Image (cartoon, rainbow, N blue to C red; front, side, top):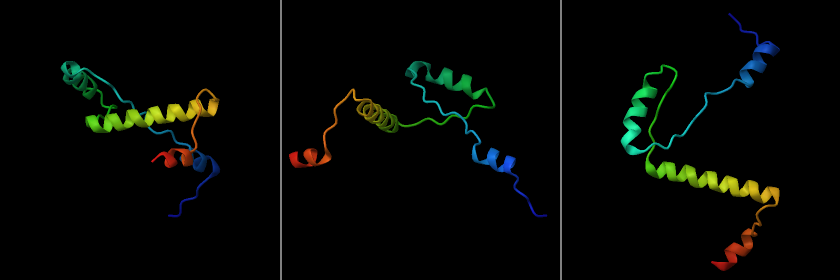
Length: 87
């Protein structure tokens, strides 16, 4: 049976909202309690990440924050050529 994409269906398909992703920073002694608590909700899916990946995500967030400050004129950026000349 052929399927006809109507404008409304196509619009809903293109702009469907994904699930929210959240990173929690929990003290080790409370982590098992929080993981068990969240695990009791059928609508919550959890996936622990390594310390290395958490650090990488933190550094990426800092970089994005810095770029946003540069765009707002609150932080002065250096040209890449100037940085490479120092090496």
